[in-house]
Image (cartoon, rainbow, N blue to C red; front, side, top):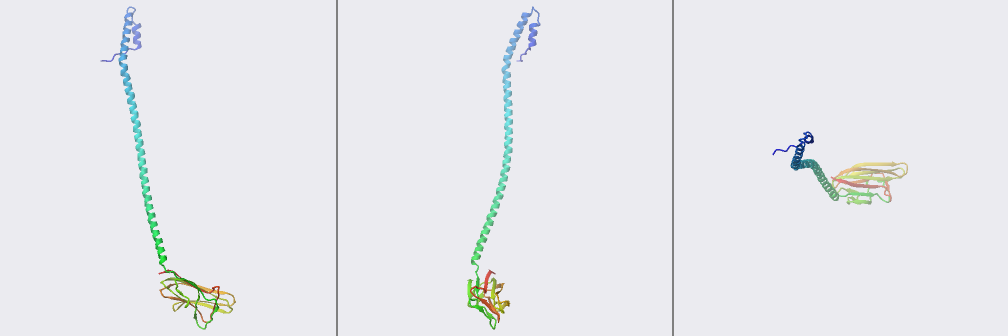
Length: 260
């Protein structure tokens, strides 16, 4: 059925006032008839227009909602990618830290083992050291021949390698040793000296001649590589003399630096 044609206000006015007097009644009647038809037509189309507008608004609301949801999904996707990137970064950092921690544990274990080895080595290493003073009786010498000195006053004798009866130190292990001595002389015109020997070999001679009558000291030392059984001792040259008393001014010292 074709839609009814709607008449404007101008058309109604023309119908009412544009006709002749004779036809006025019929014009009004026609106008009212037209209005009735318009009302009937409006009554027919209003529900259709309302339904169409409602449908349009619903469609627009759904489109806007869909666009909003699409934007939200895109935003969440971007956030998810950022979170994944951050997670990968944290995983790499965690892996690097685990590797570093593992290396530190390894180094710590090695250090602890080295400490244990040093403790064991130190425990097993022979301990050799001695110091002895000459005498409490005062002057020693002079003698007509070179005479071996006997340091009777043992101060330290770790390892028992020094024999106070013979004044001979005998190396208990092969190694590097250090020996030193100090001697005192104070009498006027007194010549004093000390000789250091290894087995039958003279390694050092040191002496001094006192012309002032006051205390005068001589001292020296050597580092030696010894085999097991090597003997170290000192002697006083012929016609020389030394002096010692309770002050322990004339001493002989030696110790093992490390075995080899």
